[in-house]
Image 1 (cartoon, rainbow, N blue to C red):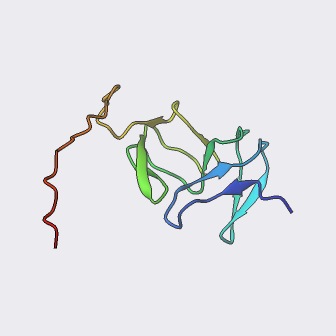
Image 2 (cartoon, rainbow, N blue to C red; image 1 turned 180 degrees about the vertical axis):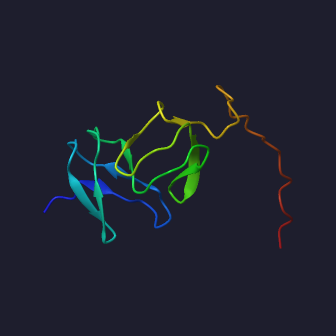
Amino acid sequence: MVQKFIKIHSNDLVAVALCPLEKGTVCNVDGQEVTLIEDIAQGHKFALKDIKKDQPIIKYGYPIGIAKEDIKQGSWIHTHNMKTGLNDLLTYSYHRNVQELEPSEKR
């Protein structure tokens, strides 16, 4: 049987569809049945339990965003109901901090 979704970390509140999943599909995630209440596109997340507004959304075992509204178990999670956890920072950049190191003494 081909796996249709993946829960990446044991603490995750979401699973990721590995193929398109239709509304009404029942997914058994760690012994818990989750019925999808929306179609879920491949690569997109769905809620494994009810998530309250302003609650962190956990994926990879870490918060990846904040719920904008109450999200029901089996719902699609995307930008329409999740906001960044970067305090509404819309852009960010990586600044590499390079320091020259002194060669260690030969022993």
